[in-house]
Image (cartoon, rainbow, N blue to C red; front, top):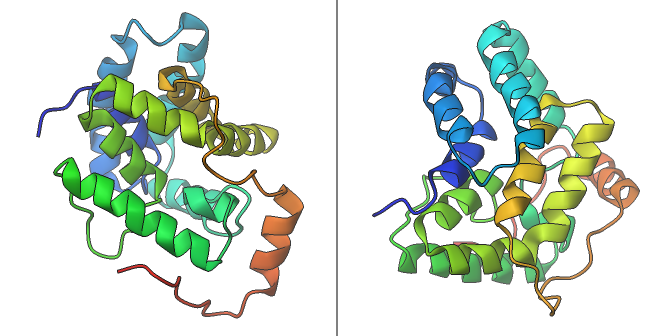
Amino acid sequence: MTVVNISLKALGALLTYPDPTLVAAVPELRQALENDPEIPSVLKPRLRSLLDYLQATDPFELEEAYVSQFDTGRSTSLHLFEHVHGESKDRGQAMVDLKTHYEQAGLNLVPEELPDFIPAFLEFCSVVEPSVAGEFLGDCQPILQAIGERLAKKDSPWAAVFPVVQIYAHPTLEDKLPAVRPESDLDTEWAEEPAFGHPVQGVC
């Protein structure tokens, strides 16, 4: 499988759980992003700050910050379709469709990983032709923009990833996904959800 866009692959990696393997890869990720002429210079300082944060922060503190940022509410969830479908059956079908695109590109998800997990989505976008990646990213641009803005309001270092991802998106004339749901609705639903949640319908 040939990587078409190493920067998208690196950006996806930056949104994964910050375990020792990811932290050890920071110098490689830094080099890939610094050397990409498509990334505007104005966006690179925030990326550098995120990379510095990953390297300099105590591992336990870093992991706690990641969980607090992405796993304790839905407004900054790293699952794309939560932001437009919630837990409706439409989300399940959307993920089945997306998984089919992954398989056609030769990309296999790790066990227990949902197709709409943004790092998996960016991995897919990194291995398809730029025009195809641009279309997929364009379809999801409102979601990516909303997550980035919500993270920025919280002064999250991970907010740096989202404006960069969007430079590879091709704007679309047709809205293929529902509108992004309000932040308050997402977190209210999360707070009211049973402790153990429930499976998403239609996901293999």
